[in-house]
Length: 299
Length: 287
Image 1 (cartoon, rainbow over the protein chains, first blue to last red):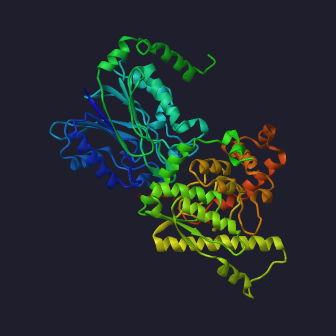
Image 2 (cartoon, rainbow over the protein chains, first blue to last red):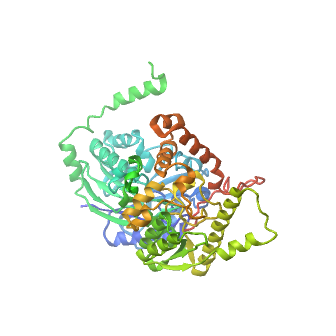
Image 3 (cartoon, helix red, strand yellow):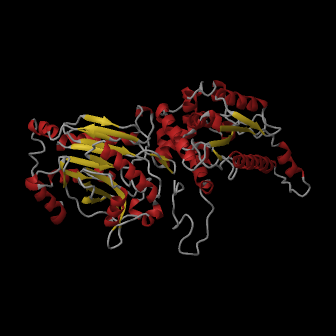
């Protein structure tokens, strides 16, 4: 049974080398502990409130892979999702997640890169000022969980993206698992909060909803710690394709969440008893989207 | 009526959640930049009492130094209440009488005197607040400690504080809590009842009271700010909600007039990257 781990860390803001060492240590530990998939939060190599530091901590994915190779000589048979500031060959800066696989000879290779599509630029968020949005969304194969998709934080607040991931794959058999690295600052402490920040309660609802409606495993990796007065919500969690919680990390502080998944047993169980995701009408979706996007809403 | 019963329902908070976030925030923001200790001014009022409770829990009481800085006109009850709070949370304290240094300035023959008594009062009040600030920053050097702020959201929005005086700090744990919420959280954190229940005062002269000076109760002001600031309602809509036209217009005016107090000084732009305009780095850069 696949062993899944979320490292809910609190990176040092703008300190790439320190954070790289932390990642190398945690990757080595995961490898020792026979973890199959290790997920870090959004921007785990850099911290969140970077502002003008974005270009200073950016690196190409090949450079990062080479650094990881040098820093992880003992890591074997592990897949990991790592958050970083990606500098494209054309010198655009993206809020990206790199999925890496270490083979049995401790050689890492890139499985997938997701560039955050929706950059929140309102309220306390200012990502659009510093990052270029991603333009594509693709699922990819993992050894651990089969076909997966990544949504970085705000991406998951746009209904279209989880649906696309759930459909993107051979014969429309899309992702069976959504990996959601996030950096969510805690806010909203009204009397009805009952110990959970109002901002996080929305996450709780939408993660369970995606798991249930798309019949996918949802792996949410939050972060702990504080930056410039913002306390991050933590609360990393794993939800089964039937919408049940399989484990949850602490709020606000660094934590580690280990979950051993009956996989693909849980996926089979959810999809054997429901045809909700299987009956998604992609032709209708395409037709109506084309009408809306191309011909205008009134046609 | 007890303070807790006056808190508008809209403003009531989950005190346990707020406590967890504020304790985490103080611990992280102090320790990750290489400090373990804090100093702060303890007046005997509710705001600094709440900061005492949060700091003691976040850093351990042995790492929190309360500085009591009375002036000769300060009420003796304030000093007694400050000692009560320090005793309650087991805090080490320093008492620094600011009378000699404040009076020395105003008694100098070359210090100009205004004919306007109101201006004289404000000058003395501001001077006291700034003397206290210089003492706190001096002790922060001596103690290798950060200065914690004790301004709440209501007074920050009203501008009811002295720029570079009580508004100055390194980390302010309570600046996003309205006064009403300070009462609620302070009660939950077991600040002595006497401190919770007494009328808030800047204690610049005997018998001073915030609420009689401002002309409205904190509960009324907080509720108005909640709709204007947090909910972003238009003044007309807030008036329709029953906050009172005079009150809404009054706090809206103070909010705008005091904006400068909540910002760094304006820097004249000349170059390509000007501090805080297009030279933008987080405060926690490198931590």
